[in-house]
Length: 282
Length: 282
Image (cartoon, rainbow over all chains, first blue to last red; front, side, top):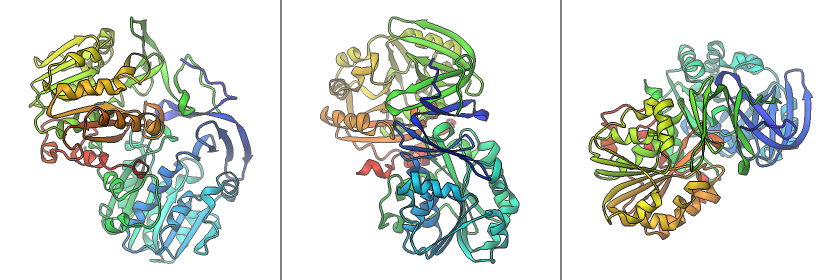
């Protein structure tokens, strides 16, 4: 049994999971209360920088590649020709960087409610922001739910919901009305991908209701792709795809011949992530 | 920032990873020092029973299915006809239970150095021990390294090394001399599978040296299969297969038509686990 000294460790307790994850730290580099949430940045001993929002781990320098690659490449290689992408949330810009690796993408609008997340990412996670000057990017700091409600029908190819957990500012992003707005904004081959929490801890409470709400909103095809994410509760996370067309096949040859480096994603990893764990099938 | 009260939480610190995992507990049910190690059993609030050896989490009731299924079924469906299985370690009997689900298996010898692990599993994890009376099982409480050294050449189809980490009693199980003993004991289609720690934390320090040592010992084919394991450091773990024949293909149709239930493993999950993350390929 060890007691963790809070001057040397940052700990996130997952109340509903009865578990906690901690990172050893050199210290806290920054803290502020924005109009939306409390943001903290820590310097860890082994995971690089750590961003925390309202007490919840958002990302670390060391392992964010898993999340950001799985929030972007599977969806982009599933859509036949994604040109117009909207990211809701995504303030740390890691997902945005991955999206911009796809040459066919012509425009990415990122709608993040809290500009401070992006400003702090620029300072503490500059590697994630290295593509922010790409002329294809447009930043909008505002309400993603409202933006989606007002979007022109059929004007978007891919919506990526890269948000915090479904409590607090992000709650409305996990609801049927929001999915309905997305469905309307998306074109014929339109796709939505959303982070969908832990397959172990949240299958009944979040993943299954998310599928139900996406289907009720008009998406005929949904699929959850699990992936490892050490800094989140249980270390196992997921992205859920919703499409007007099937989402369990993808442009495998394009994925194999991609002209950019990845650290986790490959066409094989994509195929593997499409294979549901046995307990998903019950 | 939270400080975890040690009367309400069990915490394992992963020193080399700069991280820690904690489980909320009702209390400690048992503790003892055996001739080999210190064993503790905790009653957690959300993960069932928790077994800890020398301060390291061994298993919880809730998530052990991931580890035990991935330590057994991929190897058993890779060998063309596994009849004679030896488990080194495996004292909690969870892997043994999965092995016995395969009708073709005729004999399983489990060589666990510490009988107390098995006795405590019978008491606190009875569901994992439900097949212990199967007439195909033989228990030997003794030194697995010595047993393997003295095994008759070609007398075994599959060796499963289900051990603690490569420090303490299990250290010798991660060495070329041990792999050489296994190679000699195995038949023509013989296979070895071993838990090989975290893909994120131990790729350079354990996984790559393990491949090198297995190949130096004569195994022509090695492959690491990652899988989620929330109760271990980083929540991402792996099993490494070593074979005299290729280990990246398997009896997929038999896996699909298996006559037993699983909670994680499917033939698709197996295919997916064979797909290396991009950073494995560098």
